[in-house]
Amino acid sequence: QASNKKDPASTSVADFTIAVIPDTQYYVSSQNGGTPAMFTSQIDWIKANQVAENIVYVASVGDITDHGNDVDAEWTQAATNGYYKLESQAGFTNGIPYGTCVGNHDQTPNTGHPLTCSTADYNAKFGANRFRPRAYYGENYAGTGSNSNDCHYDLFTAGGINFIVIYTEYDSHGDDGANMNTWVYNLLGTYNNRKAIIVSHMMNDNSNVWGTTGSTYAQGEVLWNRIKSRE
Image 1 (cartoon, rainbow, N blue to C red):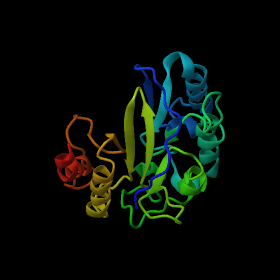
Image 2: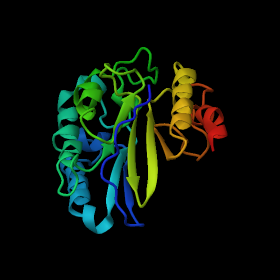
Image 3: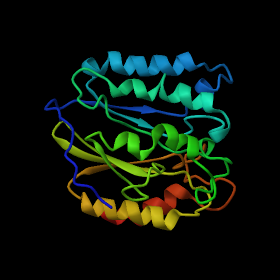
Image 4: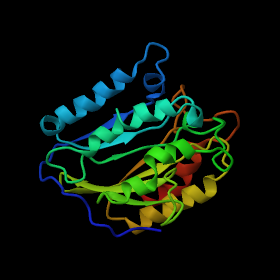
């Protein structure tokens, strides 16, 4: 399922920045002191400082929203007033490259079972069809033709280094872990000339150990054990 798409324009500058955006769920849902304007200001800062900081890529680590398919307005805030603003930026034909990750709060219900939880609203805003026209987008885990962007990968080059960024869906109970991890393993073989960045919503828990949620399954640990031979 790998793609040979051409990379976006690269930079010859050695120093570059990859921006990482953690959970925005309370911004877009206006909870716990958060407001949508806070998220928008973060995106605006990235755009305003793209040249000064040489920001070459933006990665989301999931929980984009708080209520999954239940509150459409949260997705509108996250997309139109958030990530979509990166898609138009001077100096980047495809805007500032970015990728999004599925967290448990982007699933409905938010129980971490990817084979039975719906990500319909996530894919309505951030589905594969939105990214396929962009040069940095690789393909999705579901295969060409599917709009599911629950798992996907991107390709970019910065500072003379070729990168692959691979996103895996939140899977706290290991429902699809073996298959997703094999997909990651195969990509790392196909693109073995690239530095790899793996993005998932659950790698560690609050104690900075392999994450577990509601079970003994540790998504980060199992993924690492599957792919570590690709070092």
